[in-house]
Image (cartoon, rainbow, N blue to C red; front, side, top):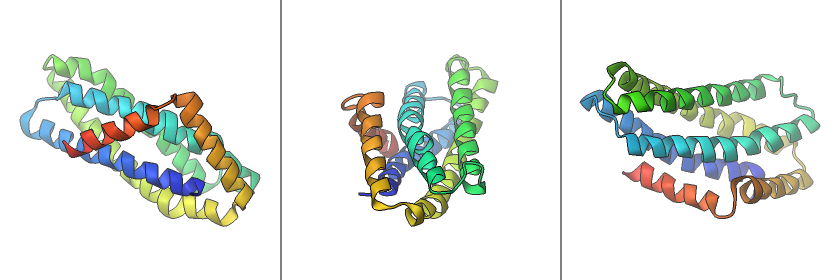
Length: 181
C-alpha cells in the first residue's frame, strides 16, 4: 500500500466521525442540548487520530518528501492544506473550550459547540476532498518507489512511537462507534 493509500484509508475513518459530528450538531440545533460525553470523545478523536497521527504523517513526512521532489510547502495546494490543518485545530479548540459551559446549559456555549462542529465538518470534508483529488495524486506522480517505502516506514513509526501500540486500532473502533451512533 502506498503512503497516499494509507492516508486515504485514514480519511475514510475520519469521515465516519465527521458524519457523527454532523448528526450531533443537528441534534443540538433541534434540541438545544449537548451530548457532552459523545462530543468529548469526538474531540479526543480529532485531536489524537486526526491531528496527532494523520496530520502529523502529512506535515512531518509527506509534505517534506514532496519538497525533496521539488514541490515547495509554499506552493498553493500544500500551503492551503497546511492552513486548513491550523483552522481545524482552532475549531476543535473552540469546541473543547465551550463544552464545559455548554454542559451547564449556557446558551452561547451551546451555540458555539454547534456552530464550530458544523464548521469543522464542512472544513474537513472539503480538506479531505482536496487532499484525495489534488495533493495525493500530485505526490503519487512525483514519488519514486523508494519514497513510498520510506514514507510507509515513517508512518508505521508515527503509529508505534508517537501514538503508542494499539492506539491506532483504538481510534478505528471509536470512529465506528461515533460514526454509527
